[in-house]
Image 1 (cartoon, rainbow, N blue to C red):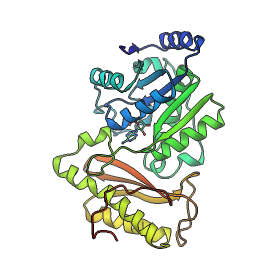
Image 2: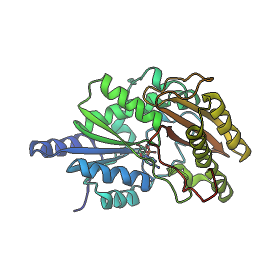
Image 3: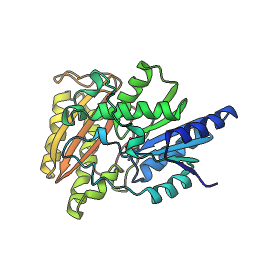
Length: 299
Ligand code: AMP
């Protein structure tokens, strides 16, 4: 079946209201397009949870800061629509900016503590832009099950918090990070990397894996683990923005001199030239290796 494409809020609402009247369950995957296997895994997950699978494709201007890559962000709607449809999307929502931000708009949604620090500190206003556009999508697409990737871990936590706080009739589902064969987390921004940078980028997942190894081996202090990650990234030629271990549920800071207590998350942001990459790993007993173990390596 060919997916339907809508570009206006009104038409999408009419369509989804008619579907709901027939008892259809709506699931949704918000994206900025340039779809890759990470996005497609979310669409497949959404297709197991709803019969009407809405994929939104919208490069949201308010989550980009001045001097960031809003203008050059890849826009590949035709290819995206084909990929989304093959993964199980039944409806594509691809609105122009003026549809999501009506003329004269003045409203923003702000989530507190959780959106400060980490990417929030490096990209002021970013999570306000994310919370604002996701609020709009929750209103337009309405009640349903929404799949987000754990790749953007802080974003997922901010959205979960906001959905609870603002009483949205939605279920937020966090989905696993999909990686390239060498372990690099898939991202639309990987396309910006030169061949040399692409080679260096794998240092991120290696640093996450060696932190996970150290965490498993001994009760290392949070600060020592963070320092180990920063050093690994810097020595591979990456510019570290942050490498922090936080409480995995609340994103609260952990005591630097103590071992990780409860479930932690190591979140990393690093730059390679003009490209900013993020990744994370849960420091918890059930966490699987990010890289295949080679015999004789990493005890
Ligand atoms: P974006 O298009 O970058 O805004 O991402 C749209 C959704 O896809 C977000 O929920 C991301 O967390 C998710 N996503 C992006 N990359 C990956 C990945 N490698 N694995 C899993 N989910 C991803």
